[in-house]
Length: 264
Image 1 (spheres, rainbow, N blue to C red):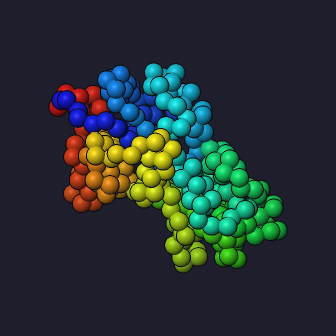
Image 2 (cartoon, rainbow, N blue to C red):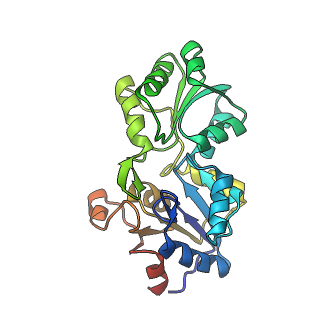
Image 3 (tube, rainbow, N blue to C red):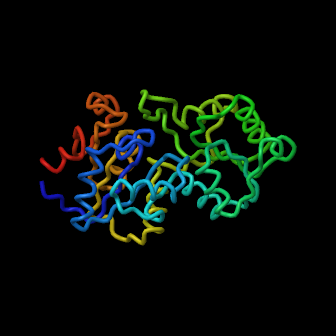
């Protein structure tokens, strides 16, 4: 099938990588589309990535992606806080990539012992595979005392080579339940804010010929549908065909992988 799109917005986890391992049946056809002149931007809810290191890995795998062509929910969260609130100090529940983006935005990142003594302006929560009960409790107490509550994304699940694991949304829900309140801001998909960040940083102005690719109906596909783009659900990650009717979220294409998309 001839794909009449100028811009492709693709997810990473469950589309290009599975816990760091390449998904070749998606990488190879995406490289073909890039060779044909399509612009590719990666928009991921995974806040743990270092954009520089991820770009290096993808280039090694044959995808010529620059760090500025990668928009993480951590970057989106950092930019929102910088532009919207008077935040100086943040306590981060998350991995290296999220800490890096918060620091790069000019915020002072408090370590656990500091957050216990001085209430930060914001608590930023993302996927944290080494999270502890104590760290979540400290974050909860900081929010209770008045810190802003920022979540990078509300993904329920995260795809790994060994099967599904808890996503950042599962951790966020522990604090939401304890505090009986919603986050002040959720940066990632399906929030269109992350697309606005992507458009700004990649200097994209026209969304008329956009294709959004993802493996999750409730994040990737909902975001694409909400912004009026065509969407592709690839069955290499979390969502399955039976989930379409359950969620009421309908992609334009459902494919086993992106190689199948090019054959349609």
